[in-house]
Image (tube, rainbow, N blue to C red):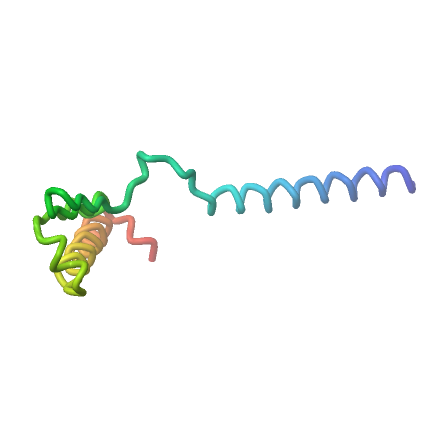
Length: 93
């Protein structure tokens, strides 16, 4: 009985470890150049947000603190994704 109990305990422990490992792996992103968020091109005075598709030639203005257009592009992209999810019926509610 002790051997069976120990094997069952080890099996349960292995399953818990695997679940925790999978959870951690899902939260960690790779540091790959294909996962760029934003590009700042100083010679061309250009900024590009790769997640939202925002591109502008006013990098100096953005660096001075005028982030409204970038933030608005992120909000618009999020709104569009939410509307698409609702239209598809996969709102998760």
